Amino acid sequence: MTQDTVFEIKHLTFSYKKGQPDVVKGIDFHIKKGEIFGLLGPSGAGKSTTQKILTKLLTGYEGEVLYYGKPLDSYSNAYFEEVGVGFELPVHFQKLTALENMRFFQNLYQTQAPIEPLLERVGLLEDKDKLVGSFSKGMKMRLNFVRALLNQPKVLFLDEVTNGLDPTNARILKDMILEFKQAGGTVLLTTHLMHDVEALCDRVAFIKDGQIVETDTPRALKLKYGQRRVTVEHYVNGGTAQAHFDLDNIGKNPKFLELLNTQTIETIHTGETSLEDIFIHITGRDVRG
Image 1 (tube, rainbow, N blue to C red):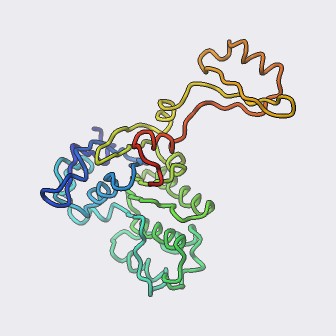
Image 2: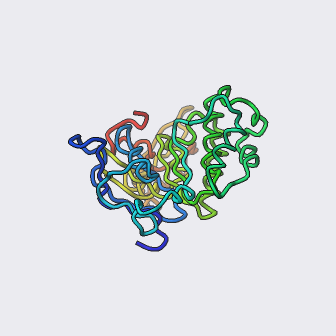
Image 3: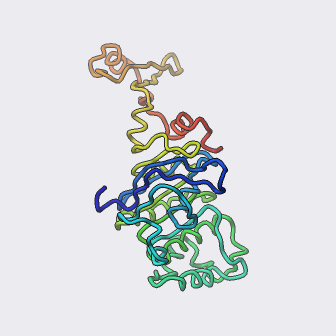
């Protein structure tokens, strides 16, 4: 691996209790600097366990986990200065205000980002003096995201980061994640929201029953699992009809060219499949499961 490799995972295996089946079963993958890497799979597949290992919340694994070429377990607590964590269930002090919460967590780090600009960016500045116990789920999720950025991390671990957010606030967080990447940051993202994956991820790995079964870019996966055909919807006798054509050599297909020249076309679209369909195909499970 190159110097730009942030994490290199080799034959990672983990069981929560000796004698019980492995939850993670010899997985291999790597994450490059400045990359948003999606770890996708159904509930119970091993995603959260893998994240907890990489954030040093779990030890006792087999295999290798290298961070910039050195074993992760060789790093001291200074490692936590370099990572930000936003897991799915926000953890805050309910009887403290948003600002008091952020100041408490900020003081755990040597490197500290300004709090109020982050609160303003996620739309919580006006609520900074309100008790977090009065916050909605979406407000807590946004505050949780701010907390992950308080130490100006190099690596972000995010789990269902936009879950429970309306489209406007979800877009704000996704824009901030992309800006973090553009500034050289690295992200490991787990989510069931395939729209987030398409908007954010450079590469994804699908994990099923503790094993990685497919790794590639979203685009490459959609080309691999999609159909190479074009569907043309056109108007006929006051209604619409569909015609299907193979994508190969379509520019020389006389029936396709005749349709374009003689009919009123409503839509033309390819047989590109969705990441949600790919998720179900690869894992055998509904993306919401």
